[in-house]
Structure formats: C-alpha cells, structure tokens
Amino acid sequence: MSPEDKEKLRDSSSIIIAAPISKSKVEPGMANYKILLLKRSRTGTAASAHVFPGGNVDQADHDPRWATLLNYKPKGPNAPPLHNAICAIREAFEESGVLITDPPTELSNDEIRIWRERVHDDGK
Image 1 (cartoon, one colour):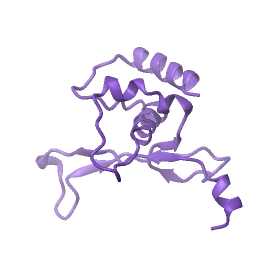
Image 2 (cartoon, helix red, strand yellow; image 1 turned 60 degrees about the horizontal axis):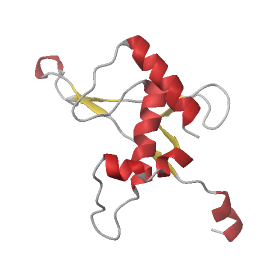
Image 3 (cartoon, rainbow, N blue to C red; image 1 turned 90 degrees about the vertical axis):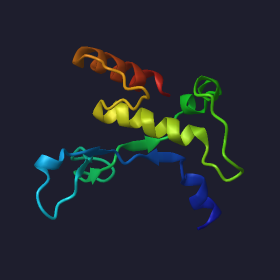
C-alpha cells in the first residue's frame, strides 16, 4: 500500500451482534442464533448491501472520559484501542437502535429515537 493510500484510510469499526433463538424454534440443521445485518441505502458506498453495523471513528470516540467511565485498563500492548469499541457500540445504536449495555438498559421507542438523534448529531 502506498503512503498516499494509507493517508486516505480512516479508522473505523464494525460489530457482529448475535441473538439466541429458543431451542423450540430452531429448525434441524439451522443455527441457534440470529445475526443482525442492516441494508445500506441505494446510494453511496456499498449501495443496497447487507452489512454489519459500523462506521468511521468520530472525535468523541477518543474522549478520555470513556476510559474512566468504563474503568478501562488495556490488556497488554497489543490490545485494540478503546475508541474502536466505543465506535462500534455507538454505530450499532445510531444505525439500528440496539444499545449494548451491561446491565441491559430498557428504553421506550420514543427514548431510543431521541437518543439516536442526539448521538448522531453530537458524535462528530
């Protein structure tokens, strides 16, 4: 890869979200989970493709307060940067409304819509 091509690359993250299916609903020979895929719009990059939630890292994903809030301690020198995990979680919420939290957080549909808009507008 040329130095010019490397300069064009932007840090990004994706996330694969799997949800279990109850044993009584699993057909023989089929997986016991579902995978979340989103369909891209008809224009732009990967038009109409089915993709995992994800996107480019935003400046807010680098905020050092995330490490404090999450009590994050890297596991060795090769640990992925925290901003990549924050990006993947944020993008999943922005794009699909799935909010990954532990413990799980329950929001109404209206609260999800409001927070998705706020995250999208402020995540620059």
